[in-house]
Length: 440
Image 1 (cartoon, rainbow, N blue to C red):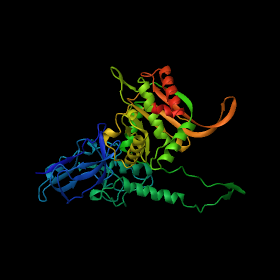
Image 2: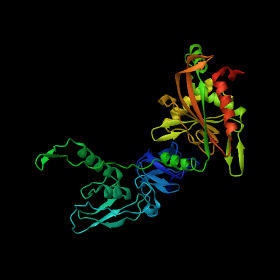
Image 3: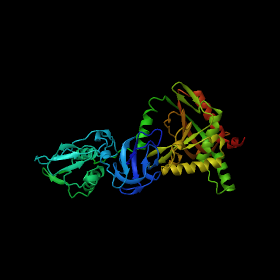
């Protein structure tokens, strides 16, 4: 009996998944529990396992395309099994949101270029991705085409004639990458050196050639970027932010790091690792900051689970150092390196990036002196860390040079009052300027 392969729920916040890579192709044998495909969720790339034995008979969405949870994306069955009843049940285009349609839920007409001749108008099929019924659309002459909704819209906006395009999708369907190729060719041609020169007109006046508006291209939003957008909308608007900034002398922290490096050359501890440890210690002393706003009350956490912002190619993710208040620096350093590496490779498990009690975002390595960060709900605060750099400061009525660093605490005013946030920063500053407090 054939097995339906549906888009699985691979993370708690996942609403749809993007098919990153098929690990099997049509006709390949498949065993239960064997990795079948890689799915991009909102935060990570995860393997989807086969839930049946047999042959991968039909792939219904292609690499780079998206589907909502529960949608049929492939069929596993016996080599000679009739699966026509299953393929006929696939959703119509309006029920399928894919990366190729970029959220478009209905078929769109292909608009002919402005200079296209008004001849007889054969039909073009604007098709969804699930094998659903195509919708005929009248266009300029040239033959019968099958075009995905996004490709149709992109072609219409760019004024492209698709009659000469050989589609690379299933059954010759023209999809996004085909139109992107045409647009790229047009951009290359537009950027080529012009043979036009200034022309003398009206008795010697120089007329410059007209300059066209800039060309552009659109790309579908990744699942990660889509989730970031949703979360930011639910953060900066509804959450009443306020910001507190303090400047910290970092010489002793830097000296401690160098001393550890001399004693244990293989023990790689960064300044950011020290900041994580100090923040965790300060949070335990100020539990009002290690808290979150809930619908019916405030939630205070016993341990400091620190989210560490890591930049990856298509967005941002915050892997979590659990119970950082209870871990030595060496363990925090090793854990952060491991989490950051797997975050960049999109190999984190959901529990490794969801459920922090407090977050740290450090842009100091990019030369940023000071910035404010947006709170990651439901957390009550986030610490933005700037660059550590030598500056002249006054000590004992003398001007001396010290390594200084500015940090800004973004607070949810529903959870944290100004004085509460200020006291937390006082403790954070005191420990960081005197890191021996960590061993007391």
